[in-house]
Length: 441
Image 1 (cartoon, one colour):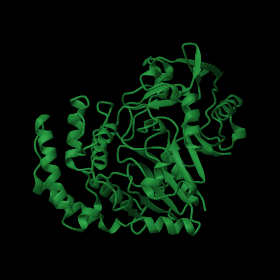
Image 2 (cartoon, one colour):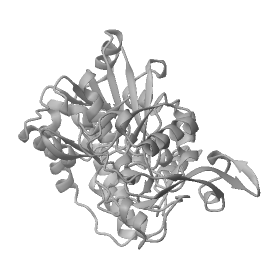
Image 3 (cartoon, rainbow, N blue to C red):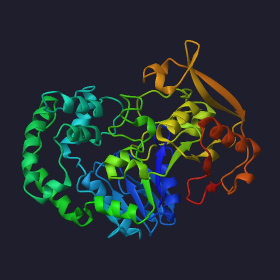
Image 4 (cartoon, helix red, strand yellow):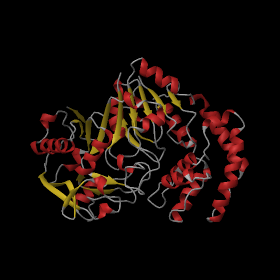
């Protein structure tokens, strides 16, 4: 039995979708345990090119069963669209994709409020507890104007922790109607106050009842399934959404996502006991990218430079151009330490081909002293002095290389430098977007 967690060691967009698709062939279960459809994983395989937002990326391996845990918030229409798309393209997910009834639903008011909060520059979400516990967590996960995808992710997590959420389990009785009426009374007041248009109860109720009827065959309590699988020695692949430094606690708060992104979230979000996690694979891009606001210490600001244009990417979910920078090994090292990463999967090494010289951030200094990422907050990262190392690049096209020995020596040196600095071995190297464009060491 193995339980392998795949995490991103940077700010997301590291290539986790490809890594999960590559690794899923030997797995019995592939699972999502956090986040929502604000995360997009791109998979290219024999079925085609896919941008997956909710269904686990490992679902393409026909031997696997896909699980969407209660820690994932769900936009029902997005999930329905993905299921229909996967069924039409021959992947087939019926009877091998299960969704936890504990999952919270993204409602129309969450999306509306996401946009209105952003425009209002961080108006807090509401909650009602006498000690303020719900509201403070609601503010924590709806941090405001930080580059939200406006898909309702922050507001739905805010409702979850302030006891205002709606889950699939509510549809088994009249609880859904009761909770929806209360929430619309609350949310419409806020929407109107912020300049929006009130939602109509009947329209929302009918739409979501229809969603439930379509998705009901996929909704199933996962606890016994997961526990029985663990006891039977099955292999699990846990797929993180987002990246380590978008975590609400350990990321660059408030420029973060609304959920916990480190492997421990699988315990709450899927029911996997921490002691069962046997491997943690840190997916690391050969350079650094970030979407939206927040610090990016190694950012390349010269948009006309060859390097900026070479690194330039478009986000799978938002379509926004990603900010780019040199590889930051202090960030990777921190992710390894924080999540107990046992192996690294290095992606996009081929993108560096053709550069005469490559810069790598080896660490941070502040006031002349060496510091770690955790010693400063998000705003302090803008003040640190970066210690760079310049290394030689390579000119060869490496997209057809399939063994480590075939790589140019300078590329091999780059990989060795990363694993020595990060403290974890690089076991897989991506040299192209396709599944087969992977070097296994």
